[in-house]
Amino acid sequence: MTDPTTLVFWIAVLQIIAIDILLGGDNAVVIALACRKLPDEQRKKGIFWGVAGAIILRVILIFFALQLLAVPWLKFVGALLLFWIGIKLLQPEEEGHGDVAAATTLAAAIKTIIVADAVMSLDNVIAVAAAAHGSMVLVTFGILVSIPIVVWGSQLVLKLMDRYPIVITAGGALLGWIGGGMIPGDPALADFFAGMPYAKYGLAILGAVLVIAIGKLLAMKAEKARHAAPVDLLAEQKEN
Image 1: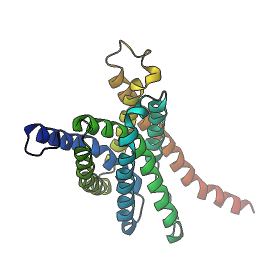
Image 2 (image 1 turned 180 degrees about the vertical axis):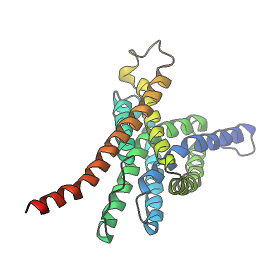
Image 3 (image 1 turned 90 degrees about the vertical axis):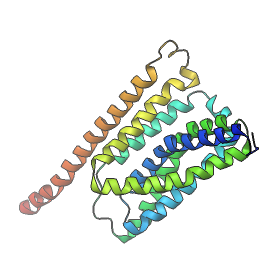
Image 4 (image 1 turned 90 degrees about the horizontal axis):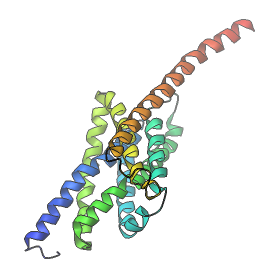
């Protein structure tokens, strides 16, 4: 498997590249969503540390992936985390943050990226490990290939978000879709979902709808509260 002169080696390489393209895009979306509120000069820092966190997590998860997948309720809790992150990222940007709040915002973005990557990297790591058939050379190759995919992908998504706000909604829906699709695969729920071949897709759709619905509802309430605040303040001033 580690001999680059064999066809088996290059088939495994192509499989790993395909996995990174398909699954690495999710991480790129998360990084872009988390960094979209940052000033332009801090976006690169957010992307850098977000990617660094994702890569470090994948290296760690490689050694514990099989054991982690057997832990009951882990995927269920991970799904709830993705729902929460998706809803949070759909909220409107807060105004009035000066340069003082910039560092805190960057730290919050990095925290969001790392939490989401910790959940989302499990499937990627398992898929790469399976394609590599235990070869650490191929596993390392898979991690290295994922770096430019996530970096380039997150920068592209950021540009699309700036131009087309609907991409933000689509990103939140994607997190809900991934979270919902994780639930039937939890070992604690395996018996419950046995015999339901379409449960994964049904819950994925439900997760996407819930994230968009709850996220948009909370965003509307936040916008109303924001516009109502100056009116209330003006009314108090007139009374005084």
